[in-house]
Amino acid sequence: MNLVKDLGIFDHTWKDPQASWTVPARVIRNGDGATVMMTIFQPPIMNDSQFDAAMKEMDLEMAKLKEILEH
Image (cartoon, rainbow, N blue to C red; front, side):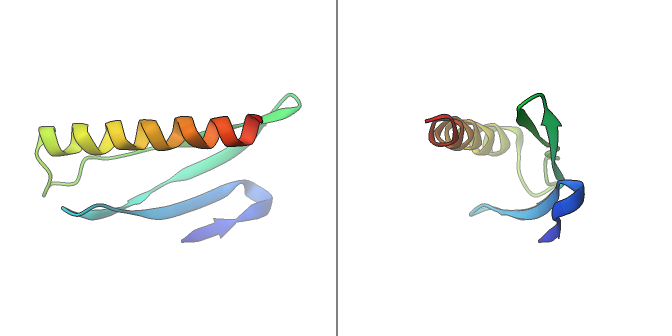
């Protein structure tokens, strides 16, 4: 993990049964809160269906994280 707290950088490795890859990620101030941004590239080893399934799983995880942070 590449973590630079003062700059809001938390690049990390996404691990999936088919592959693992680096995910650049940033947190930026947004009013009284923050916005999290991640850039996800499809690894060559994953076909479109596998990647789409992984992204659906990530959507669920991000929704749960948002729920936890907002309550």
